[in-house]
Image 1 (cartoon, helix red, strand yellow):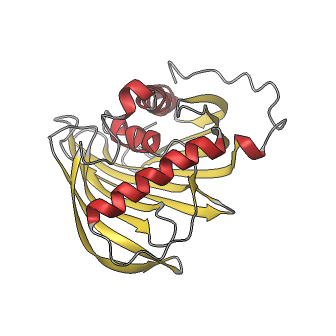
Image 2: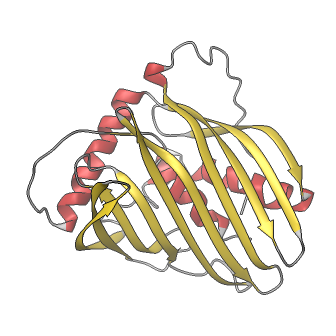
Length: 249
């Protein structure tokens, strides 16, 4: 199920919390919104010094009547590189071993500074078109169409919502720019972010895929207990995080 690569790449693109900062700039263009979003991303890395958090992965396949669950601890260094420690796993062993663990491995690789620029939401990888401003979770957000500049399974086509006050990524929705495999008919995913204090953290990720053999597979990722390292000194004195090299959809 190589379509998990895209989800992994997108998670790696937002590998640290986004700093909230008020602004009153009037009606910027799509490119201006993206530029400001990326500038805040730099501020995030500087101020947060990385982050720690946890995720719960739940994969359901109705055709096989199978479910896999995995809980992991996440650690992100100041340069954005992520590593994972599996806390628990249960259910469909094949999915845990060949999908969920592989997804963690893909995300860890995609988060490396030498690789991350190839998948980030930047003008090098995408063209942007502002379609309007819309309410999202009680706040206003710029809604932007995202068009990939190349047919790459690590990129996507769809829409993003950028918070109009903080210029933080608040929502991503779309499908792969290119199908990752002949065996995958379609994939649709949604990622949401929530503000907690000064920072924006991942909140939920969902994807639905239709495959020729496996049929419909649903993946839900719940993100919780995220905190910047700059404000969590001493909480994980000796975390012993093991980078996932063997380590979901």
